[in-house]
Length: 310
Ligand SMILES: [Mg+2]
Image 1: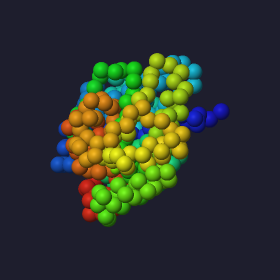
Image 2: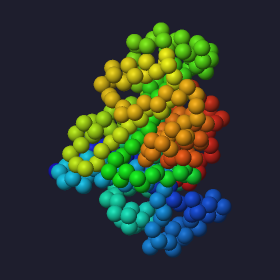
Image 3: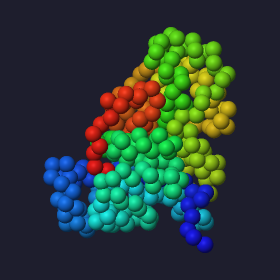
Image 4: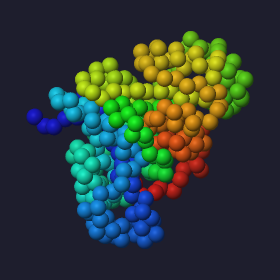
């Protein structure tokens, strides 16, 4: 029987999202790929420090500890070269992360490998790779490498927070807000409260987490939160949409435009996803955060950042 990842939650993650390679990345950006490779080889036995998505990956892999069939697979999908890839695997081993599979594309975009992996999530520091993944239907986010690291106060509970519009839900309501303002948005959402919103890019990930949540099979638990700028009366359509999908979130925070950071710090997520750069930047001061370049707020291609090393 060939190996298979069927039935598992598959997370594809770049080296720079999993580990802190910011210092090495500066060498890459200021010199070249050869100098970067030499530096990574010199540091082969020096474990890289945990990066922004390390806590998320560490806890996800802990779901496999209960024995029985594995439930989560984490695959390195990276623009790194294969030589530098050796340090990634060694660093994973140092922290006891059972990461066995990896794709290293030396500067080329690796997003095409997401389809054969059937990835449920792609995390990378590279904006264009994230956009390509989202366009291919894979939930994906650009990690903010300078984000605050996750709290270590709840090692047996994976906590993930999601924005609503253009992340869990489509951007259809967000378009009304952008085009016509807050009053029109509130009226529109009140009138359509009973009509579920169309799925957004991260519905498949929430769905996969919900399946794991209903069948824990070990000591690890999952807690999810919707953290949205919506407020009453627009809350109702969001709640009714989740009910129509038969997906529950554990917490819902309707902020009516208040900054999300302090509320996220109180929830202590291992990761937070949002489509608005302002919210993501604000959140990154408090918790690990990623930008979902989807929906009307990200439609301007001029907003694309120059691709950093992944
Ligand atoms: Mg949003």
